[in-house]
Image (cartoon, rainbow, N blue to C red):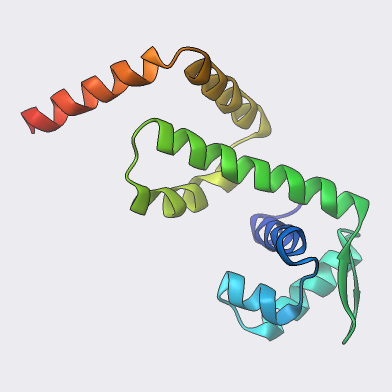
Length: 141
């Protein structure tokens, strides 16, 4: 299993390739707000772990293993964002909250969150009831 730091890189690389068709060291560094030298070190490690293939000055591609992990990591991130949005977390807090919790949840928990979102989508009254409770609590604060 990749470390949380490795996960951040794989997720970013996966997103860049999906969005732009490629991922360069400079793009990854910008996306993660790290130095290019840090990216190069991690990319070399991810190459060793067979998540990607890296050729100096030529770029990188995700392996089948890297694509599978990247897709799952993006799914996890989007699922958590969706849940926080649904339950009324303020938009300015969502990204930071997701970044803070995503590496600390088991895949079992992620799957249960997916089930919960499905329940909310199938019965929107639950969300309406939750918003009513939140409004009452805000009024009483």
